[in-house]
Image 1 (cartoon, rainbow over the protein chains, first blue to last red):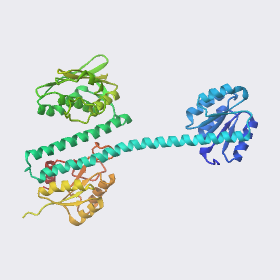
Image 2: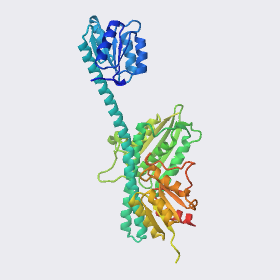
Image 3: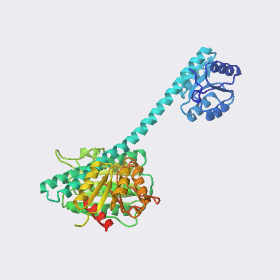
Image 4: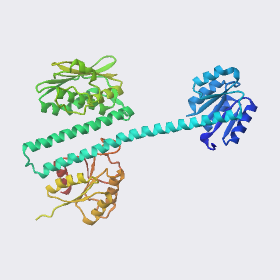
Length: 365
Length: 128
């Protein structure tokens, strides 16, 4: 098979003119595109420009050594396949060059058949490497689109179900029994949970891709905390939980993404409301030292059993009693942990069963 | 009897369309529906609704935009009250739609799902 295109380009770097010309004749006769040079540095220049698929490198070059040439070519030319040409005495350096990433070697003297066989094998290998890379890239692209696609495809029906429930309430003109209304309410609540799940899932994916937190700015953490507290206060009031805060003035600024941090705090405080009985207290305290800004969110809830603490940041892990339903996506704390990681921060939890739980967050100054 | 005000809903999600239609009808409006942009534009031309609600994210992102541009280019429709419904966006489901400066004039942007009370309140205000 002939390689008449750029993909099949063969470069020969050898200081012996007879070898260069001999190889060129043999390979061109077999239909390959061939370029030759007697110098390592010239070979690198040509390779940068023409991006050959296969390069034969003589290990005993004047000036730059063959091994150096190999290192540079492998680092700079994508998917290039290298074959070293060696004298009988230099089998050791052939082994060394294979270790560095050369694909094959061709000991001198060699016959035209040997040269053709090695060339074909090298170019076949190159085609495989290129194909594998193409597939990998396509798969990555698909995985990315898949998440976006699925979250869209999941959310559209959710929105329609929500709108339909809304219309059901209107159509029945509030003449439904309390029981029927409770059924609608339960449906609405579970749909919201599912929406949260889709959102968190997508967010976690975005964090992994590095696309969620793009714009970090200088932030006033007191501001973020107050905003989060304002957001969650109605929920605490509904559940009869006291939300208190101790946020001193003059906290040093931190660097980060405001919106995701608000969501971290809302998430953690919201989480605390699920495990704290009415009449309990959730407190938000902030302080700083020379290196960090610390935020602690404590509740007087039922606490987390010691053996479960190591798992609480794991996706879909929930601390619950048998048969109990706890609302939420199961990804909230995983989301918080990833966001904190992305901020170079730390999130830890300490808890005493029956007494309460404290989440400690630490941000670098 | 007072003539009912006519509202056109343009959305390619038939179930969503039906839900929103019921909410509006129950509140005394006459409701026309269109399941794609082209039918929507034709209906505006032929049936002359008093207000149109357009889904931004139909089959393609451009479709809602095309509808609004076309309507605004129609004679006598520069001031037709237009509401955009957005919320489901392929760029990321939770990115809300924000029109750029070149975007043709719309009166209101609402996000899906929309509460019945909110929808009725806004529609009434725009028809006043």
